[in-house]
Image (cartoon, rainbow, N blue to C red; front, side, top):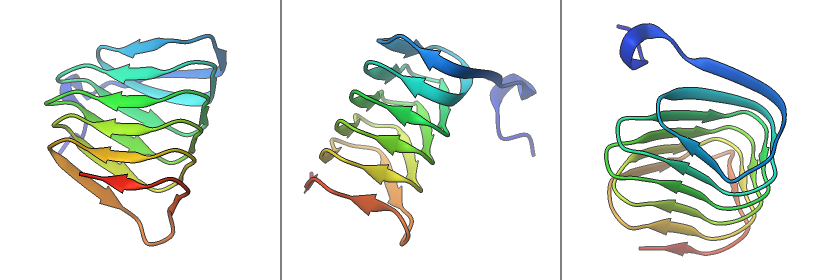
Length: 110
């Protein structure tokens, strides 16, 4: 089974000046200097650093392997966390999974 709709994920590396809006399947290997918003039906794989917040919209997917220096807000998507969140984890809906090895420095909120 192909995990990404359409079978293709764009990969960007290096410094990305945010805010960044994810509309399709995207893997980030670098640093986003602002916030990231993942729109419905989109898929984000973060293998770097986000210096702002990450917001996952209803129907979106996110895999956070890196570091989020702001908050992570799940507004009805599917989120898997394998890295570190410096801010709060806000569960506003959807499904949020945290690896036992992940780190949450802020608060978990429902």
